[in-house]
Length: 562
Image 1 (cartoon, one colour):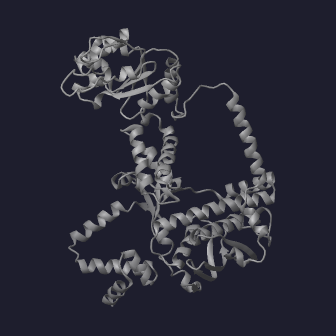
Image 2 (cartoon, helix red, strand yellow):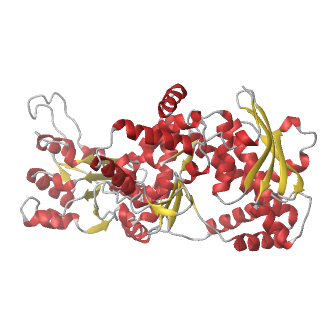
């Protein structure tokens, strides 16, 4: 149903700016400001003036207008995504009203309404309004002077982006005049405008940008032609410790030396082993992996060295072991520290001479296998306590490579996360726009005791919970107990715009105070009902939503107050 309202109803269509501002969080200890999942920032208007002036002097008026319009459009679309994700069940008018409230919260402008109609389902939309206290108008006229041509470029872009986002169709907004209060603008669907070619060009990529990108691609091509260290595509990381580990491993790849990969569980030792094999002259030969810790002691020897028919009860056929299957290639022994003493003895012989014999066989077989071992335990300590052979330890420890844990390579987290997003979104058939700022903050704040394997599991969870064409937020990645910890030492704005402590401590004090005074439930309910009606400026529908009850229930509770 199309809704048509005037200014007196516009401000009553939702709880207002106080509800939006209550979502702001200030973390002074970390230097961050949050609006739900999005990181925000404050800027001096003088900085914006300098930026706008430099853009105009460098690129010209038209190109600058295009850039700022597209920046505003992207911001508007993101605000629409935030509102649709944060507020469920709003009327069309309330959904529209959140856009100007967000813009006001961001310090950009106050919308003074002249007329508005909206029906999202039918695609009907019209707005006639004035941008009052427009910072963009103030900035522009400050160094160019009064002008009737469109000057609220990013605000036009924001309005077009936000409304297009909630309407799910392109809704163009135009500046039509300059009033004493500020620029007046009108918005309606594209087909209802007579001439739009002039405005639409500002929403399209500038040719000069395309030229710059082409030049950047040429530079990248030249960089690719320069000699550089080989980094396999499966190995993702730019941190110094990670690159040092791969540089060391790469030196071993061209030889047959036994490599011992060291590191915590989940750091990617298997990926390193694969990369070493693929960088070696044996890359076209088999790569065989076995997890020594996943097999019981009575089976590990038969898995490694094979069995002959009749070697033990149930051995109906002869079977080659992993050493024979890896002949000419590479054998990766993961969790080698879990091998039994008997298996260690046979492994030592194979490493020293290349000779193996299947269980139940007297025939010795010669194999040409390059061994890469991995462990997350201290083998030197295992030797000291007698659970690992000293001679095998020295044989394996010829070329140790330590892979750093994820907590020591925080700069690599986002690149790894993106790889897993690509992997799991393809598997689940979802289009994912990326991670919210809060999700990025949560990923980078976590200590990752499970390392890359834990990160992979966390991203998989996020992909499953995320909706199509949406962002992954922090709550999709981590349980509430962890995301709550991220909000410790947080400050917020009170209704008067003053910074105060986060709601958890005052709320706890409030509850304790009520209990100490033995306040009745009826009195507490009346207190909340009055506060909700006051915050909603008398709008009972909005007050009901604040309390999570129906409009009818709200009306009944209001009558009880009388």
